[in-house]
Length: 225
Image: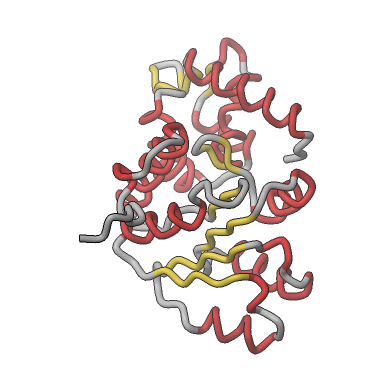
């Protein structure tokens, strides 16, 4: 019997980082319910904290294949094209040390991300400057909340009595109704950040708390979103 502990296979087997694990569980549940890939995800931290393990776990939980590639392996345009062409629907691409990727190849990845044709997980050692650049290009997520989720919550926070009707929210956040109702709201209701009332959508106390934490976080890390 192998005396060395194997890598965890599922989220329940991952030790530590309970907030991250809980957020990933919820995001995986939502993606499963909507039959869509997990949102693009950025893992950062020093070596050995489990970035690659979490990427593999996500693929295991989704029952899909994962392709793990160091950014240093992408030295030419054919290298990048070959990687992208090898992916099948719902496959996970994990690029380690993505901040070392040549700018011209990073631009190609950004286009794929924006068009939602690539499900990307990236891992890198912590560096606040490069983290901010990747967040700027790839979108922002805070404790499982996407930029659109946060925009929704912030709109309610600015509304009278923290309540707004659906039509007002659609106009205020500039997001299509179908996306709002089928993708964003189910997650926010599930987390208890909003509730649906006769008067409209209402920001809960938990919603106010998470917004306060978010605002403190972006201020501390000097992140522009």
